[in-house]
Image (tube, rainbow, N blue to C red; front, side, top):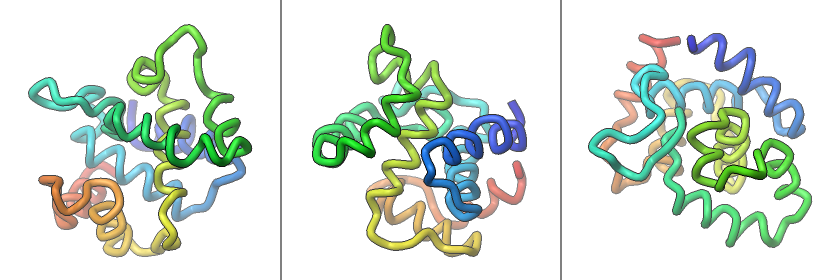
Length: 151
């Protein structure tokens, strides 16, 4: 899959179906995916780490999203549930179902009280603070370089 295919065939349509689309959200999710998955080449974290999907979301993060956010917002939970394949576990949905992984990533970012920045530099900082966190190995500069290279 190419970055444009991911944007046009999955990210955009999923966000629009969720009624959570904006150009900034679409760009941030695409940037997250190309950076986290080494240009859409990895669905599982290097060295058998726990992160899954192009977005490299850890199952623990998905469970936290369910337990501490969606369980108190049933209307938002429905936005994620509409993409879930019921015969798959939540973790299997992350790795095998790109629409579900996209919806989960969007809702994880939706939890953030700050608006998504409009610039690539701003989105790199946002990604680092709210997705990768200060404990993560990724850097804002890598996010920017990967976006420019892959997209």
